[in-house]
Image (cartoon, rainbow over all chains, first blue to last red):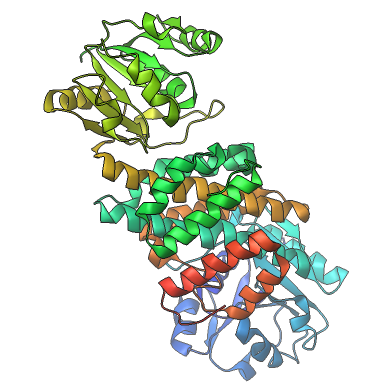
Length: 260
Length: 260
C-alpha cells in the first residue's frame, strides 16, 4: 500500500475526523487553519504533523491536499494553492469541481457522506466516499487513497453529488429537526426522546430493508383524517404547518384522495 | 408470576406481535377477527388459542381483553363486550380511555409505542408501554401484566398519550416519509438509500445522546442560503415546498435571522 503525504486544510469536524483516519495509514505532513491554536490542537493528535496558519507556508511537496473548510471559504483558500503540483481536493457536497479549476491540473472532490461532530466517534471505514477527479490518473490515485480509508468508495460528478447532498439534507438534517420537534412535544409532558428510541430505530431499519414507500405507516397513509385533525388542534402554528404539509404530501404520494 | 387468561380482539400487526409476545408468558385463550381465516392463522401461531369471527362467542371468563383494531372500529367492537367482567383495554395512541366507558367497570389503555409490521421482528421487551386505567386495582393488574412483557412501562393519561402519538408521527411516520423522498432523489441518479444508512444511523444516535437541538447540522442552521437555493432549484414542487418550510423552520428555531 502506498503511503501518501497529505496536507489537511481546515480544522473543523470533517477535517478532524479525516485527519485522524488518514494518519493511521498515511503521513499527514501539515495542518492548516486560520486559527493557529486549532491547527496545533489537531496536529498534536497526529503522529507527525506540523501546524500552520499561513497559507503561503503550505508544504509544496505533498501528494494530496484536502481542503475541508466551509463552502464559502473554498475559493479564497484555493487561490493560495496555485503553485502546488500534488492533487487538490475539497470535501464539500454542494460545491462543484470547477471551483478548483484555476488552481491546479490535478483536482478532485473527496466527499464523505456522513455527519461529523467533535464529540461523536465515527467509524470512517463505513463512511461512503464519493469521488470526482479532473483526469483518469488523478481518479486512480484518489480511489487508491479512499480505499485505504473506507470500504465504500463511489463515483459522483458534481451533479450527482448535489443530489446526494440534497437527499442527505432530508434524511439527516430534516430528520434531526423532526426529532427536535418530537423532543419539544415530549418534554412538555415530562418525557424524554428516549421513549421514542426503539420506534426511531425500527423505522430506520424497516425503511432500509423494505423500502420507505412500502414502510409508510401512520394516520396520513391510513387516510385517518380524524386523528390528523386531533393532532393539528394540539400543535402550535409552525409545528401545525409542518404536520399539515407532510401529512397531505403522504396522502397525495399514496393516492389516498383525501384533503386535510 | 401470575399467568393471565387473555383474549385478543384483532389480527392486524399490533395484535399479531402482542399475541405472540403474550403467548410466551400467559394463556391467549382466544383470537377474534372479522375475518376467520386471519383469526385462525394467528391462533395457529400460538400454543393454545381458539379463533372466532363471532363477537357474541367471545370467551367471558378471561382476565384481560385487548382490543387491537383500527381506531374507527373500537366503538363497534366495544359494544359487543358489555357482559365481560375482566379488564378491557385498547391499544390505540389516539383514542381516549372514555371510548370504553360504557362497556365495563374495569377498562384501560395499553399503548405500545412501536411500529409493527408482519415482516419485521420486534423485541417486545424493549418496547415502551404506556398505561392508563379506570381505577387503581385495574392499573395494578395492567402494570403487573405489562412488566411481564417489557422492561419499559410508563403511565400516560389520554392527553399525554395523544402527545406521545403526535411526537411519534413526527419521529417515525414523517421521518419515514423523508426517507421516501431521499430514496426518490437517489434512485434518479442510480443510488439506493443504502448510501445514506451510516448517516441516518449517526444522526439518530447523536440526537438521542446529545439532544436534537444541539445536534442540528446542515445548510439551514449554518445560514447557508446559497446552498439552500441551489437545492431548491433542483427539487420539484412538493419536495421544494417541504425543503423550504423545514429549512426556514430550522433557521427560525436557531434564531439565524435569515429569509430563504
